[in-house]
Image (cartoon, rainbow, N blue to C red; front, top):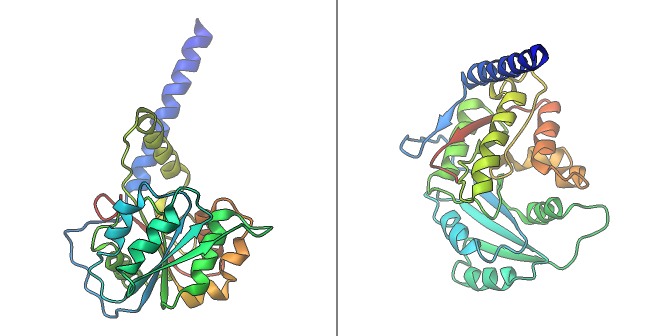
Amino acid sequence: MTLLLVLLWMGLAGWVLLLLRLAHNARGYLRVRAAQPFPLQRRPRVSILIPARNEAEILPVTLPAILAQHYPDYEVILVDDASTDGTGEWAQQFAAAHADRLRVIRVPELPAGWVGKTHALHVAFQAARGEWVLATDADIVFHPKALEAGLWLAEQQNAELVSIYSFLECVSFWERVMLPGFGLLLSAFFPVPQINDSRNPLALASGGYILMRRSMWAGLGGYEAIRAEIIDDLNTARRVKRSGHRMYVAATQDLLR
């Protein structure tokens, strides 16, 4: 009985310490909102990179939102990564009505030595013409001000990589059970103030929104330098920060979901 009480007290103490750590990490955690203004000094061209494999169900929701950005100068490059559900066919038909903004590239097979998503991003990056690139996921819904928010953060923070953490929509039972806990663990082990501190080597980015200066990422070898890495967002952030470039992360509840 005494041992059980000791274990219970140790567990309680662990939770208290975790909550205190989370509260400490929350300080200085910038949250950007759709209602705030994002005045920009410059408006460089941006290439939005979307790797898509078997995303025919969600793209009719997410792609029109990406193409509805208020920002004036951007292009969208969607890479159909050997999909078998009609993703490429739907995207090509949609692109016909948005030829000024959207290009679709088909990847028939994965080359040896590459991870699928990283290769799709590499193909899109090679085709990009923007001064900046924004890597995202096919299941992210963009608010019309999402792109200019990232560029505003880059200007304000003098950063060459900006990542905005999306609001997670938990629909199923297991999503409601697992995702909040996963988010808490990430906050505990990857404190945002440390990520945003240029003197600290800790780095993390969210794959749903990674905005980078194209010349900077190309100078670091681009996606080819992380071609075998499964966790592309973490390794992108690490490579950028460890090379001495400034990165900055923030969160939102309504700009991305």
